[in-house]
Amino acid sequence: MHTILPNGGNTYLSKASITSNELLLKLSWYPDSNVQLKLIAFIVDEDMKVRHPSHFVSEHAPQSNDLTLQWLGKQGNMEVMRINIDTLLDDVNTEPAHKIIFATYLAPQENNKLTFRKIQKLTVSLHDASLTHDITFSLQEALNDPHYGFYDRNAMTVGELYLHQGEIKFKAIADAFKDGLYSIVKMTHALEIVL
Image 1 (tube, rainbow, N blue to C red):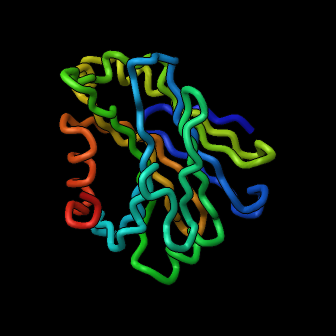
Image 2: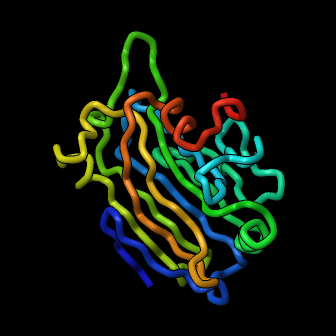
């Protein structure tokens, strides 16, 4: 089933119907050789804090210690992350884990501080192997809307995965920041862990 979410929208994913007990989250954008977008994720507790170094996942730290999250790499104009549902549920039920926050930032380039004005067709998709669950969140409307102020920003959250009343939910959420990776790490109180 294909679900299109607006900014702020959310949807349930039934664990029993998720093929192979894993999900793939993909961040894609219009190809541009001058733009390097990075996909990252944080496992946070109910206070929005990262409690363990391996709960920050990126190309430089490509998996959490229990393999709940794995960064699978860049595929053309796309970065991909795998979520293991079984270990996610174990984390939430036995550790102070509350949700997974997915985010992206523009890699800084020498003498050129890029902003999201350079980005086109920025999209998040979340699906399982059989496409029983196929969720799409286009961030382009938010990027083009002056209300959100993305024109001078270079980092943003793009979604959250969490449990609600025993069911898995995904929330499409685009919040922008000015200071790249630093601003997102600061939001999750992970400066000492990550930087």
